[in-house]
Length: 157
View 1 (cartoon, rainbow, N blue to C red):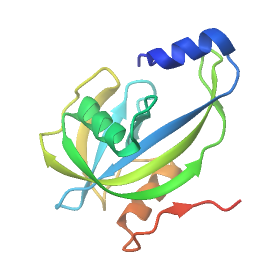
View 2: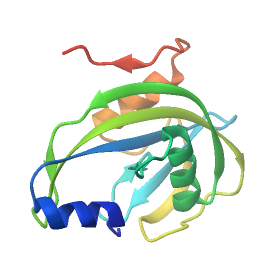
View 3: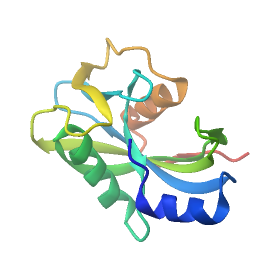
């Protein structure tokens, strides 16, 4: 996955030090009770569509862009699902990051899912009752997106 230009420019100044970034995650749900997932090229694991917000980009706009870039599906954002600070992590090259992640519930409006960039190995709809192995955090995002309560979930500690 190519590193965005703005991150490469920041890394020239800060090296591998911790970089605080805004992440965006989409729970794209269709009318057949399925969720759109990608099998990531970097880990080989199935995951929700996610990305990094570009400087000055509105979160919902950025997520719609990410969904289209990764899956060829056009979607609209329905609501904010959760806001959370993820634990710090490191990339194999030593770069340290920490994300403030904004997770949104989305609805597809057109397009058939397909691999649309080099970030994914596969893209497909998965029935909610037969999901592949997903990290706990992503399972929680899906559960929260399915909640009838429209209020976003956020951590208080």
